Image 1 (cartoon, rainbow, N blue to C red):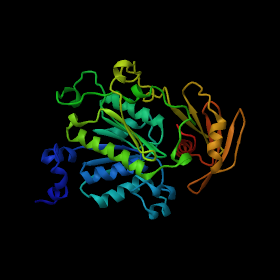
Image 2: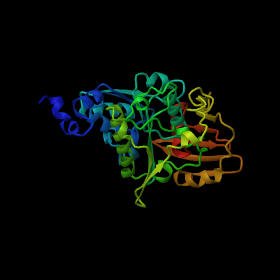
Image 3: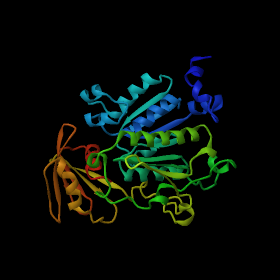
Image 4: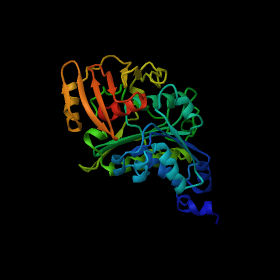
Length: 365
């Protein structure tokens, strides 16, 4: 038995794999969207499974608070301030040298997603904000690419395998009579992104590592089914778990496509992909600050609610007009000025990627 056969022998024994399934995995490319808790766990499992090419896109550096749940990193990465994508690439090379890993240190947005997604057979969600999830969903639906949605915060998590409807109905999951067929997309399930400041983040409510690994394991299982051609095994329901209250639910969401008039997969509008919706970033000359704006209608942000969440991270003042918070993050000091329409100015950096990261962590988008 060759080294390759030995490495994947236990996996190849499983129904639906064998030599052909393993060959399909080896010829596939998975785009890992974000390399935090979900992304790093998914990347490791996919590398061990033998997916031939992993493309990892992430904008952040490794910090000490990551080590509680982000499995590809260690204290040396923190000490050396290694970008997460690069630290993941280095670690995965030691796990499975036969898998090609491309590390991209960038903030995923509507201007670069086409370049980063080129050649990808599937998207695996490791994102920390809904705005970029809707961007990925737009691209996946437009180009007929499976998208493994997932999220985890606190003790809860959710995951769903999105197999987009295509104009000609000729995607493998649509033309295979034994397959489960196309599914609703993310905007079928949640037509609009939640307003900034209304959703919890790992930095404001914490996160249980086992909630992350549970969601990532589900995402990877669905990814392996897709890449090996086992479309009849795709789970048709939305997984929802809470490991603290011991609840596991499988929500039947298949009817969301038929019942709704999705702006993305039914109307063919790709608002996040074309930049109509989503945030913009402007570096404020001479002020060591970045302004982040939203291209949606004013959201009526509840500043008092956000202030209550941020007070444990530093000094916070709030009025009906503006919230201002001092935040220490990753060894750097920032001042966050937040306005009711979701606009923010992040003082302490002139880099849009850093500013978006602070906003995503402490406000949530």
